[in-house]
Image (cartoon, rainbow, N blue to C red; front, side):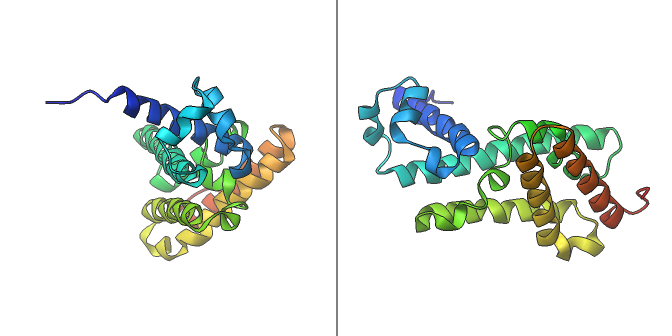
Length: 195
């Protein structure tokens, strides 16, 4: 028998979900307790009924952002693979897509936050490192077996290309950078990909 979540659990999840979006849009330093609570439709005073500290919220938010991003990636990859794409091609085409360029608040937290991760409190930095490791593991599973040892390099290329494209903007220049990165990765790692 499934037990419905309590009101407190639902409220907690709403705060975490809100913080996950704010964090990807504005970075770790953009996650203010008052702002997150206001966006979640709650009062600032209720925060400490759910979290011991802002860092505790950040740890949960990065985990939630990663889990949500991984679910979107898996769904997109499955749809692309159903149309005949390899796992690697499905991954690269999703990760380096124009949609991912234009929606940092919905995208991969590693790409949104990588430059800030080392400057966080140890528990937040470790939660962020877990997301990096999970991204590398996803890339490893998608790569052809002969290239699986290159997963960290490919993950770095994916994240770096997306970050640079976002720095250029959601425009022709940013989209061209993504297209070039897709072509380069697939030419290098996808057997038979037309170069």
